[in-house]
Length: 270
DNA sequence: ACCCAGGCATTGG
DNA sequence: CCAATGCATGGG
Image (cartoon, rainbow, N blue to C red; front, top):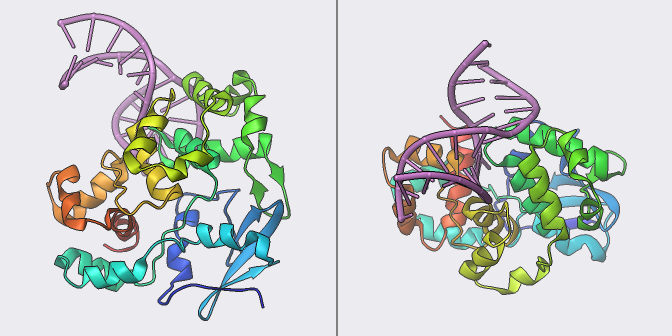
């Protein structure tokens, strides 16, 4: 039985909203009510099911990555317990968005390149450009595509990325990151601040990109992308004119999950 | 034809 | 340390 158990409550459609909100993501593709992604070289489809998610085709090799994709590392029960004593806004977000388990980016290189494409431009533009990158340098499975590998983009020419709509700068960032000697897998063993230092030492990766890497790839509980425009607007809409960096202290140690609840809340609630 | 959008490096004070 | 500037695309 290819059933992946996730702690209750779990709201599949709400949790995967991000993969539909800004147009299709060819590497995390919403198709006929299910989420398609290439895992371990093969396309897998995830569908909601009682007690968790049905994953097909399933084998033990892919389980860890699919669990990561679906946000299993987040301690949602701990968050909900904490939220009972939190402010009314958090309590309302939790009651309206119950079961929202933020998805994660299973691959560090893909996560960073996705962030580079989203720097400064609208997410609609970012997804369009990223999808062209995927079609040019990735591989198609059945429906979804595998994201271009670091090795493939290390061999890419900057001009090839320009023709996909990258700015000259961003083309340099992507190819430079791919060719850099930074060990992306090793970052998982480091504390938050050290991860940020190593990432921001790479040209094209700033504080915003590093914060989202901590939040969406490493699932660090205290990650809080204070510079993110979407988060700033969400905080303003729920809390008014407050200091975005300072307000995060009241969410400790659940800043990451709160950031996601604020962002999704700003999109699906009033 | 504008203007803004989930940044960043670079340049100059 | 902080302010100003250019960047390329998609949507309004």
